[in-house]
Length: 240
Image (cartoon, rainbow, N blue to C red; front, side, top):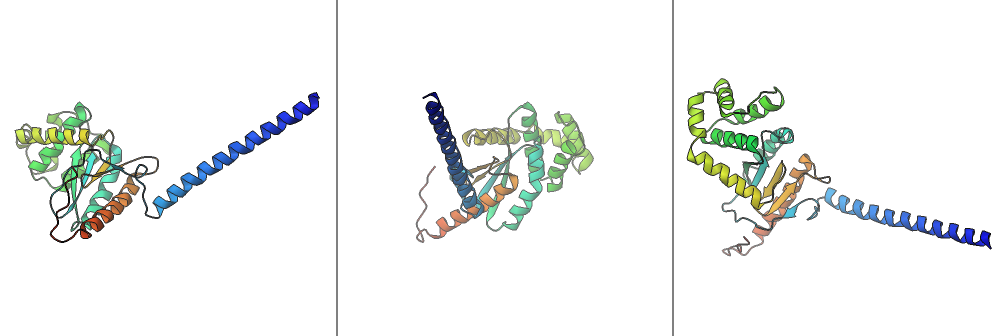
């Protein structure tokens, strides 16, 4: 009798083990199917991108691609050149807007630096030099004066002009706006992309920085198809 119970228990344990394996295999096949669909171009909402709860209405003929970044983020540095080349190759269709994430006092400092360079009409090379100084050269650019010295050394702008622009109301407004945009879109890490104020692409286990651009291409294609399918003369409803 004892042997029979032992035999039955072993059978039960075997059946449980088989069931666990089957469930695990089904889960694996489900994930693989979803991943394969993404690899083939059918990116999936909730896995490769999300739809913003509070979309913004974007005006103009070009599709806006907003990158949230920080000079303090090494991943943003590694992504920056690829993003720039990608945007330049699509400059007739896409408008790239870089927006600094104001996540700390130091990142606010870097955000002010970014908008100061913009308002001075500084060349793109100075934007790239800021990344290099922080991540390749290990420069300690943690104060307005240190950044002013850096700009004077690496460009035609003197530090007084830089500091004057940095303290302007325009820069303060721009930093405040970037902070509000990030909060509305629930941006908590960088780099992240927001496409046409509607879709957010984040770096996740399924989407690395390089694949973000593939997802962006997919969403831009969808938006372009949506735009061309609208009857001529009919305005798109404002979903914001």
